Amino acid sequence: MFFVCNHDWTAPVSVFDAAVDSASLAVEQGSLARQCALYALAAFGIHAIWRSRDVAVSTSMPLAIAACSFVAWACASVLWADEPVLAVRKVMVLLVLAVAAVGMSRRLSVTQFAWIVFSSCSLYLVAGVGVELVLGTFAPLDGSYRFAGTLHPNHQAINCAALALASMHLYTVNARFKRTFLAAGAIAVAFLLLTRSRTAAGASFAAIVVYLVGAGSRRLSVASAIVLVCGAAGLIVTLALLTAPRALLLGRGDSDAETLTGRSELWNVLGDYAAEAPLAGHGYNAFWTPDRIEEISRDEYWTVFEGHSTYMDVLLGTGACGLFLYAATLLIALATSVARAFASRDPGHALVAAVLVLSACEGFLESALLTTSTLAFLFMWAIACTGNFRNDDTAAQLGECVVDLEFVHG
Image 1 (cartoon, rainbow, N blue to C red):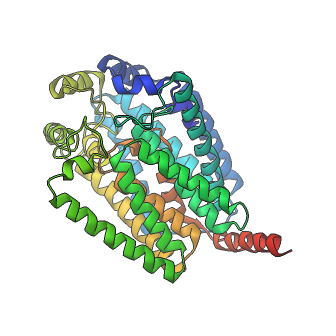
Image 2 (cartoon, rainbow, N blue to C red):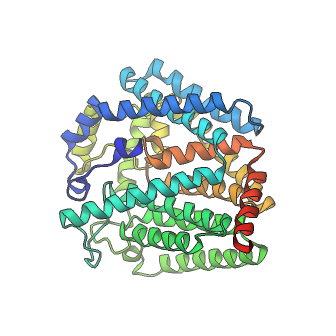
């Protein structure tokens, strides 16, 4: 579904030359293929929820209340949206992803879901490399090269991050194919760095550390904590150096670290628009109309069709009230999942916590959480798992490990 919605076979030669007209047209008309894929995903979600209605779950009421309140507020924002039709479309996407995520979290164990992520993200990566080889754009030794594949490099980076996390989890819980998962994780990290996406790289580092601490032994947790402290200290030292801007750009000479690649200037402009509807916003994810895309892109001298921050776009769409509910949902989910992971040392809890950390960090400088992207679905799945965690997940996890050990020794 996400391949149909977001992937483009000409991405290596088209994503770097995005035109204002094409961005406006995409917002105005949408995509028939994307609509069909969303209908199929909605049908799957409803079917999964119905088939798993007898599954025992532990519900976190604070998280459920916060999440449902945000969804309700987003739906209500259609009533005062600047572009009601666009707001309805965006709300429908939100509901479809939410239903599918809940169905997936109830129907599948964490490890089963990790297999799906591993398989799909591996195929996306292989397809991306194949496309670049065919188009002749694969040049990893070029200092200005950014790996795109069939996505924008920033979105491809998230695909690689998801593959790395899934590989780590499967490496942890499976006694077989460990070398395969280890190699897949290493390849995913390598291509993540080739995208030169700074936000995804930082978010992935934080997510990997959380997973290692949550799923590993206490000795491994101490080692991970030392790595985290040393990494943070190294970052602070780097920021103090005169060469920090260049280092933070991962070798990208087309960017400016001091303005976060133009984001700070953009946020100043968007702050004025947010002040026009400070409490209720302009309608869920409906701020970016074709007229506003053209106007803001003209003023900023580059094609802008998102706020380049999930939190900024939530503020623009649903106002301070919506941002409060969104932040409450995220913080409750983070606190709950991290506490579960660190207390239980269970790989399933650790993976959920890692996905939430990845999403929270990525949301500061990118808006992928509000699109029909892999990260958006992973984020909602992690919220659903935290709010309605399957009681049989830990038992299933232990059972899989026992089966694997029997295979090795038998």
